[in-house]
Length: 295
Image 1 (cartoon, one colour):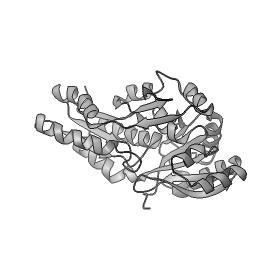
Image 2: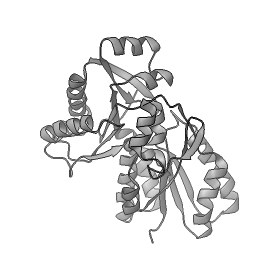
Image 3: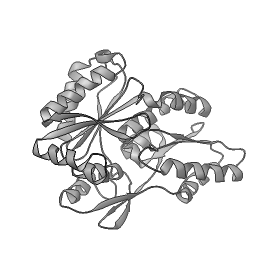
Image 4: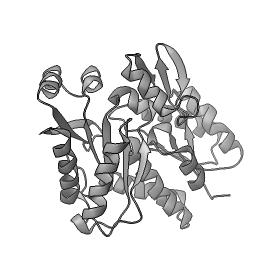
């Protein structure tokens, strides 16, 4: 048994098999298809392909965050079993889940005064959040304590770079991530905005790029600018996609060509149902360790 429990939300957008292999527990968010509620269980109940196909047909989606009571129910069995817990939450810049986890932490500290329950705001999302979780799992497996691992997360979480583009702006407009005007012009002129997460964990449009082939080149160029050591980057690189695997593979192929020192092959994951309910199909997201986000 590991010395402490490392856990996250389902919004880290890693596969169930990957989380199981890395011994990372997860708590599911919730999403709705036409007002029917489902657990975001990493595609086990509804495959991602079916979820995005439903969105493409116009089925309405919405999500709900994890509340404090759910967090307490999730954490309690581990605390009762004598486990200390390090929980890393979805960015507070796009969700209230971190605040709910902090309420649960305060309540459980009174019930389990001899146990540690540390809650950290990842300021990240999707497989960038997942990349942070994998890094923390590496530290845990090296024998780092819960306090050392938590301190590393706080010190380095803003070094996880998140860059996104989408070929369908419908859901970004609906969620207020981009303006209606940008959405209209983007559709008419085939503009694929390049977005990233800022230092407060919010999704911010950064560049307007015309056509998908050009934005694929631009996101790779952006990685060369921001990655640790530029094209000599030797860390991990993750990509997530929302029903556009070919686009994700095109980005991966360019990166593997231009970044020969990468640690292993690029790992490609699905954008899960919670994040995907807000992005819709057509999103590709790129994650790597790089320059600290400062704005």
